[in-house]
Length: 604
Ligand code: FEO
Ligand code: CA
Ligand code: CA
Ligand code: CA
Image 1 (cartoon, rainbow, N blue to C red):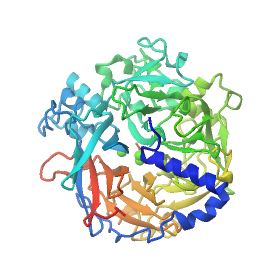
Image 2 (cartoon, helix red, strand yellow):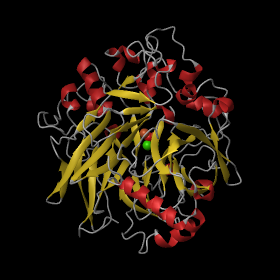
Image 3 (tube, rainbow, N blue to C red):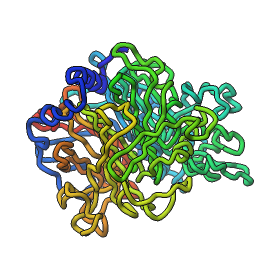
Image 4 (cartoon, rainbow, N blue to C red):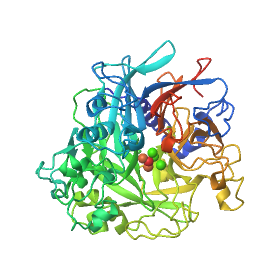
């Protein structure tokens, strides 16, 4: 695959050439403030007031439309969405999935392709035709499994509106039943062997797909998060092992009752099946028919996203959060170097996984998860039970690490710590303390914060880093203590639960939220979930968009010409709160929307 044909490919090429020119990150730091950040105003739009309406709110001069909704067919042989039945197993397998989350855009020649994660099926909406509001029949379960996974879809713009290119040769659905190659240290290992796959080479399915990443060789990284919810145990004598307990695996199904038609989800019969989930999966979206890969080298946990960048010497660096209270922040560094044009090789199969330790003095360290450091017997065991390995080396328990984003031009990385009501009160699921301090400075943290670190010598491969807090979310209207938030939080831009983040090519940080929408109490004035833009140089933050009721604002991607932003609106109308995007009495549907300026100019 050619390099530089994706957005991230171009960003990484730019990073490489800048590094070569400047020969050192101190210089890069000094220059970056002047070069990247935005010669013009970083906020060429009016701030959007918080609100609790059931639609998208944008600054004056902007408009939006729907690109793809849950249940929209990707092929012409599929029926259109049926608001009565809300789809079948067969229709869902040929249509855009539910709960769109992480998303990335790829281009080749004139083709523009989105990869979109589907985190889970919104049972209360999808099974509104069932008394239980849950999957009841075998076909319901097929629908639930097909609604999860990933959609690959070509999109095109006609008469100012973007839509799905139905029947495009690249259109593709990955579901909970798609065959996926197991790669890395876990391939063939006893911990991943099952009755159906004794060689531990081919797993079935990807689900609970949350955040994402992109590689410079043109592939998509989809991240498996709450995989545990779909497993259960039919044997009443089942007791979760400490490892299963740490990953939230228990006797009761909390997903789509998949075990009723697929016994591999019964841990009392197939104990290793759950070890084959919780990974980052790599997909080549521009090569239809290519087999996806589960990347065991990157570790097994509740993956949020996978932010790929390069060390000074060209090794591949992947930053990853594990989104659970008191879990950890990880870094993977490949053994070999990426060479532009050289392809992927074993860059995501052969490398070192480390975990972050933060110190109160603003320093931090990546601690390598080796057999010697963890006391574990093999590289495979360390990757499969990464949480236990990280506990063994005394990593810092975090306030739920969500997305990580690396600045496009300088060695500076941001991670959303969304909230943690147990901070200072309880331990994590492994019994590790969650003391107040460091990057998790508030007890019973209900608002969240964004931590930022700068690797030593500007090298993402360095073992040490310095860190600070970019923003502490809060509510300065109702609180006067630390819950008011940091100085860059005001009555006009306040928010809670920062979750998705990513940079635009101009070096601005786009923040999406997954929090409480509030009219009263701690969240009074926050309104619905939203998207804000931050200037990393000044720390200033301005609200750009408010989503509809009940939604979370998730994935973000930009059209190649910079004139459209694509945004994932997940579970709008949750708990009966609304009918986005179609209004009236229509069922609410997760959707990818396109945002443009009315004058056709660059998006922001
Ligand atoms: Fe899928 Fe951590 O959000
Ligand atoms: Ca998230
Ligand atoms: Ca979240
Ligand atoms: Ca969500």
